[in-house]
Image: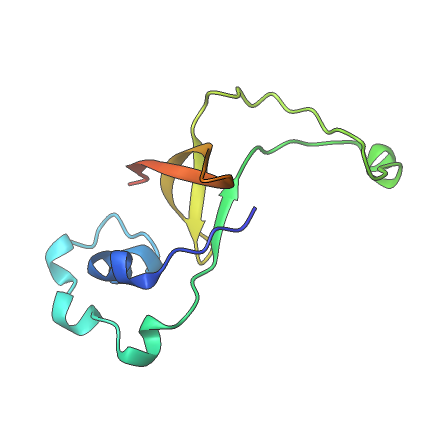
Length: 112
């Protein structure tokens, strides 16, 4: 599933969302005015990925996969999912739907 979010709501957090996590770096090192997107960056797309589950299967089973096959996981259907921005895990989310489209609701920030 791909989710595209307009940059306007994310502007205040863009610097924090796209930088690698560094537990030793104090929050006051982020300069909000310098992190404001330019007009060109406001139109840039951000890669958003929601991980539904992680699972391992045998190589033999991988080669036997066909359209319509199901891969079962141990992920609880009510457990939060992980949303990554530009490949960096940033939020916990829950899956759902809005106006007939698949959607996720942000529940929290991943801090570690």
